[in-house]
Length: 122
Ligand SMILES: O=C(O)CCC(=O)C(=O)O
View: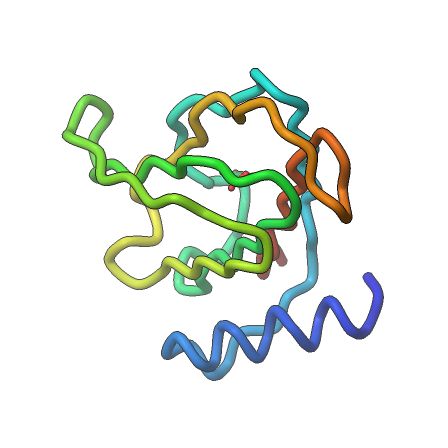
C-alpha cells in the first residue's frame, strides 16, 4: 500500500476516535454510472474492534447505512469527492451499501466513482 494511503487512513481513523488503527489492506471499488453495492456487512477481518475507513473519489454517490440486522431502516449520506467516512465501535457491523451511481463526469476521475476502503484485516 502506498505510504501516503496508509498515513491518510490512520490519521482519519484517529480523528474519528480510533487512534490505534493501522490500515493493512485497501479495497478499491470502481463504480461506473449505474453500478451499486448492495447492503452487506464487512466481516472478512479478524478484528472487528478496528474501524472501516472509506474514502470517496470522483462522482458522488448515496451511501446507505442500515442497522446490525438486515432489513432495518437505512440512513443515507451523500458522499462527494474527498469525503471520508469512518465507522467502528458499536457501528462496525452495520449493514451498508451504495445506491446506483448517477451519470456524470468528474474532472479527475471521468465517468466513475472510486472508493478506497481501508481495513485492519490481520
Ligand atoms: O463504495 C463505498 O462507499 C462502500 C464500499 C463498501 O461498502 C465495501 O467495500 O465494503
